[in-house]
Image (cartoon, rainbow, N blue to C red; front, side, top):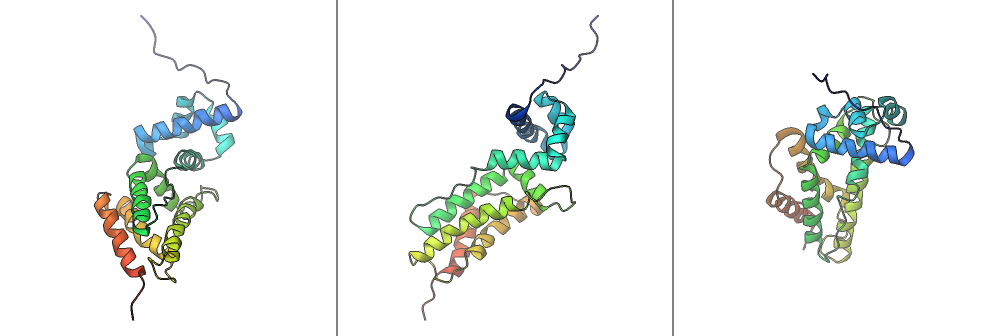
Length: 196
């Protein structure tokens, strides 16, 4: 009678090969098990590396997950240029809504708002950097005369992104294109040039 299955010994991976295996395992576990099931031990097992190697490189589970998600999701929010501010914002925020609808996007958002001191300084810039890049869409609209010259790019971007983040973090209400379009229209109404 065969004995219990024994896990194979960890592989001797180093450098970039080890990093890619570990980060891939994180993304896979997040998709299947969620944030709670993505432990350092589970990641190490799935990647075929020693748990101590993971801790040595990333120090904490949160740093590990953040590195995996920022690497995986870095291209998830492209900056469109359709020639019309409304369309650009709808495309950008529809991409954000799709990202926030994934286990990875939700995990990244939740990690970004935790304030327990376990994450290093890389966590907060992820969202602020990507939302600042969206400000160029508003500036282009102002340059073309579609928006007031003094329209605040940060405020317009926050007016649309804030409700999306709230839905993920607090209400679990759906994120769909109708919502995105409504939020963009609402924000743009406040940023359009005023006739005197």
